[in-house]
Image (cartoon, rainbow, N blue to C red):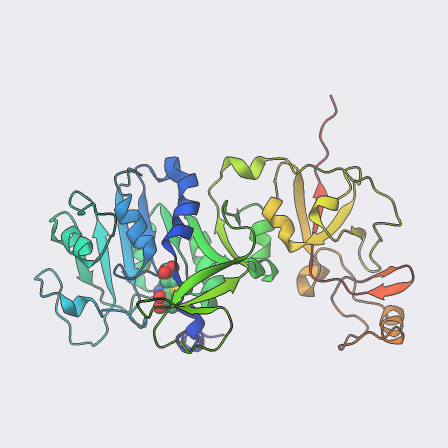
Length: 379
Ligand SMILES: C[S@@+](CC[C@H](N)C(=O)[O-])C[C@H]1O[C@@H](n2cnc3c(N)ncnc32)[C@H](O)[C@@H]1O
């Protein structure tokens, strides 16, 4: 997709406007305190008046011993600049545009009122401090714009919840500039052909705190109240619950090196071999047979327990990623057997998807990650 087509999609896609809850941010960031010391943190999809990421880092600036905090606000955000108009402050450069991208740079936090409820008056105090600045951006605040890339180059750690529709491009940019990051995304990113190699090569992994259930996000007031899982609070703010949310990071933490305890032994009746890939099928991560040396297909939620010292990631069960790791397209025989046994959907010979037989019945499993236990030296 071209950049302009992508932008159009992003702008039309209301699903990009989900505001992360402060508690979810706190629950993750607490594991990285040491890594934040003396670092420049950049929140590059964050209106400082709205974003709990900005709020969290401003409130904890001294506690985390941050060197600098930068946040940039995208001009297409429905809330961009709304709050700025409430100020009549000289440090806000005047602009003719109704909505304007801007940045805030915090070098010192000495005057937050400390009542625990960080609000606009706190932001106002922050920017009145001569060491901090709030200024209009020349471009639109897009994380890919030149100005934002210059800020990215300066930053040590990027922390945000980026627009869902641009996730692939967002993470590619972080990798290109060799940045540390802690970002919110979805577990389905595993299936992206651009993202999977990063997981496989141990360049990205899941964060610490979210491994199941759904998470609540605030959405703009204009958001239609259609889906189930919506809530409106006493102030009229709208919220939606989202499934599959996960933190993605490339900062190490001790919990990811904990061994997954395995107790099952391999037997061929319980763990069928795939028809078109040299691996066995396992339906639950905790059932991985401890003594099986070959490749194992597990649900993608395996990543919630993944210890890179215990397992290596080999491949993925669908699409081009399946072929890349040595999978073969489904055979004509399997396709015929599948339909004879009442299978639905449209599959045909060569279909790029792992399949198997269980007690003679053709099975198409849900998406699988292929993993292998790392053999330990027995000395
Ligand atoms: C999922 S929301 C999260 C907002 C905020 N980071 C938070 O967690 O509360 C993504 C934000 O990115 C903004 N955005 C969309 N496209 C963008 C782009 N190309 N560059 C920068 N920000 C963008 C949206 O306006 C939206 O506010």
